[in-house]
Each structure stands twice: as C-alpha cells, then as structure tokens.
Length: 272
Image 1 (cartoon, rainbow, N blue to C red):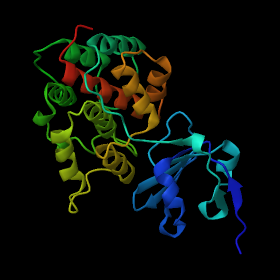
Image 2 (tube, one colour; image 1 turned 30 degrees about the horizontal axis):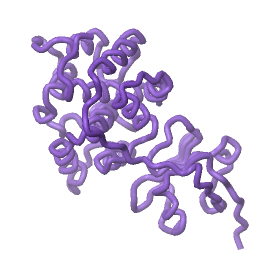
Image 3 (spheres, rainbow, N blue to C red; image 1 turned 90 degrees about the vertical axis):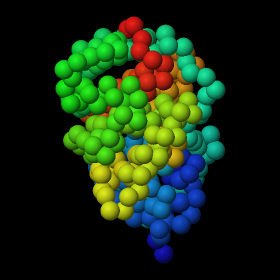
C-alpha cells in the first residue's frame, strides 16, 4: 500500500477541498519551476509556492513540501484558518475617482514595461483625453475598451500577445474583475463566454483559457481581489499594488492596466 506523507498547506482555496476527495479524477497538465497545474472537472488546480498570488483552485506549499510534491503521495491536513475564497466581492457603489488617480500616478511614475505593446505616454494620454486621433492598433484597443467594451471585437483580443497567458488576456481578467465587483459585467461576460465555450474555437492557451473561464465565474487570484477591494474602499495599499504588478514577466502589469482601464470605463476620464 502506498505510504502517504501528511502535508499542511500554507493556504488552500476552499473549492479544492472536495476535489482532493476524488484524486482519481485529477491528472497533471503542466509543471514549471514553482508551479504544477492539474486538470480537474472544475478547471486547473494550481499547486504553487507563491504566497502573494493565491490563485483560484490553488494549493500553496512551503518550498520544502513543493520540492518533492506528488499528489499521489500526499495526505492533506487542512486548517480552517488557511482556507481562502477566490470569489470577488461586489459593491453597491463605485469608488471615489480620486483613488483611481492615486494608483495611476504611482503606476505612471514607475514606468513599467508591459506586454500589450503600449507606450506609457500613450496610456496616460488615452486616460486623460476624451478625443484622440492617429492611434496605433493596440492604443485603439485600449481606447475602445475604456470608451465602452461593446465597441471591441473580443475575438480579436483574446489570445493576443505572447506567453502562457497572452498579454491582452491578462488585461481582460483585470478589466473584468472591476466590472464584476461593480455589478456591471453582464454584457461583457456573455461576449467572453460565447468565445470561450465555442467548441469549434480555441482562442487562447490552455492556462489563459482557464483563467478567463474562472474570471467569468467571479473567481480571481487573491492579489487581484485584494487590489480591487482596496480601490473600492478608497485605500491606497502599496502591498496590494506591488503584488499585482510584480507577478510574472509582464502579466501583472498587463493585469493592472486592465484594472485601471476598468475603472476608467466606469468612472469616466479623470485628470491624472
């Protein structure tokens, strides 16, 4: 009989717990230096060492536990205090636009590289100006998303950009998180669902498809949830800001631009 080692996760998404009761339905999808993805009937289960992100369907382990991790050789002991939820809160009113300005000023000052093909000066210009001309293709996408997501062909955006999670997919996750938190997501959600659940179309990578699918169900990584909650409560939280923008290569920056664009769309254009 296989001897299992008892393991106590540093954190675990509550939705993972019932999945662990039927491990025969779980199989590995992909493995990286700090992350292992497993296929389940609820989406990808993510085993990782990253304590700052806490993804949907996530299990967060210590470095020692992760190094020799094998699902078949582990027996989980779960403390209630370490269980988290990936579902974003919803709010009855928009945040004060001044907190949007605070985050944008910090972001523009940091002048971080993004994967969207946008220059920081162009992002600032689009967020400050109501009428623009001579926009690049990527600038036009950002402009249309802020002006009204209904003006954008989602099929031409999903899967756009390089990486396991293409840059514009990361943007959409951030943008959609804001709409969801403010109960303004219905039309946009339907358009994304039509694309994601079309069996004849594979619009993006497996991992990004999973993130988008979870997003339209209201499920996001804790770094995104924490930042959105801070903004909704009119708080500048540097840790939440940094936990988003530092994720991945440019994925976090692309997600942050999506979050800011979501608020620009809801609040109207601000003087930054």
